[in-house]
Image 1: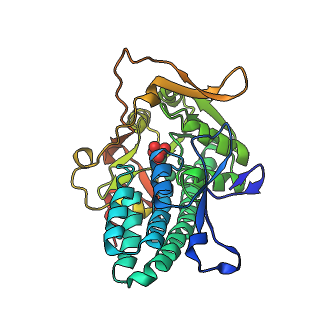
Image 2: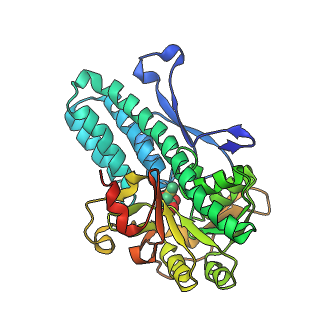
Image 3: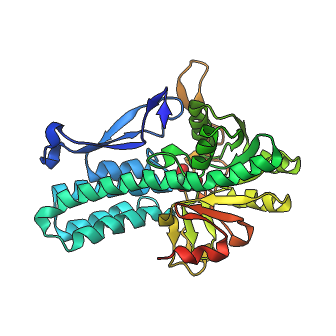
Length: 364
Ligand code: MRU
């Protein structure tokens, strides 16, 4: 996608000129998402510790992107010490950075499985190329999600003969992936195909990922309106929402969807108003091992400072943090919730659209 009309991805591999195999020259670039949308600044990551810090501090975020970033982390670890012990230690370090999105473990397993049988002297090279493949696959996967999801929007447009109003929560756009996004990919592709859309962008406290969604949509010229989280149900009741699309961080084989905190309430409101509710995700977001999503998915408890503070531009024109609640009141800050399958109309993946009951068809 583009920033100021210049094509960008949210992460990119940096290699020395002339395709040097001197793996010390390798690094990855990211857009530091803690600064968005107030500033667009690139950051270069060169070590596994840089990668772990970037994921836990949410410089990179969004389930697919943290998986891709972690894969590069293992490549840096193998460059520095290709032993089996280092592989398992650093995979565990990276896996612990954020617990809820299963794409992180999925990507680490993918790289580990390639390395495990390889001789130590080949591991650095193999890990680097596998990480680059994981990144490239993410782009193709998200494009395919968009192609499938676009059909739902197109059908709604034919039926309604007016712009389709879509509500989304959090940011499941291109900066949450390598490119295209998951929930936003169908929206971008509908817009590009000339289908009129309008997006209700929920703020998504406490980290306000809605700011990223609004910024992305603005850069791409997609009509949208920014709303506070509490307003979604109201617009649904008044016929202003035709469908909901969200991303996902972990989905059970039976279709329960863990996504950003607040998603469950939107699904309840959508059901009450007979509005279709879709989750768009790569198959790597499905955790087939889950027996009971509500009990078994670890919900990340994030720092209280995220609730006590807001980030914005001060009257001086600089981006700053503002305290809105002091330590006098305790806070709780679960990062995600689980929407039960019964509230989900369909799951959009790179292989197509399915009802939750048929999701198991894609297990293999
Ligand atoms: O805490 P975040 O910003 O990493 O959470 C992101 C979300 O919940 C997204 O909706 C989800 O990862 C899907 S991203 C394509």
